[in-house]
Amino acid sequence: MKLTTILLFAISALAVLANAEPLAPGAQAPVLTAINQDSESVNFADVYARGTTLVYFYPKAGTAGCTAQACSLRDSFAALGEEGLQILGVSEDIPDAQKKFQQENHLPFPLIADSDGKVAAAFGVPITEGRAKRQSFLIKDGKVVWTSLQAKTAEHAQEVKAALASIK
Image (cartoon, rainbow, N blue to C red):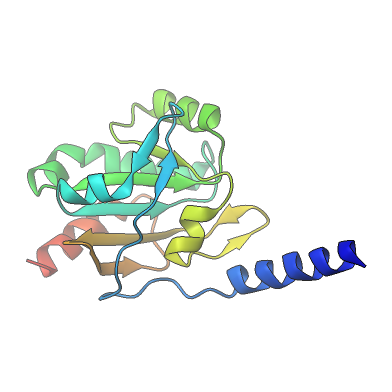
């Protein structure tokens, strides 16, 4: 009986997470702590406090689309930094996979290892087959100010630049 109750609860919780709605502009940004590619804690509130922050979700480190997206942001990192932008990449990969992805692609920003899905859940990002949907959120002054619910890969930096211009 107990096992049946636990299983039903787990299935219900997964159904709720799968149907979660992504945060919309105006929503309070999630304040949580997660582990980066070096297995160090990253406090999102501390990152937000340093300036406008892009939190972008990608399905899997090392895949073609995710590499194109990350490298787009890498190639525009200096220009985006001039705008005061902080970047956090998030996927369900473990820290070692995130570290390898970061090193192979010379990514100058932290990658969050969201193995338990808590970051994706906090942002309302759908997860299917253990992979987050490609979505992005700009956070300014503790609030979501822009979202891309079907973020592009190679053109992602241009999307973000346009969004930054629109929120000034």
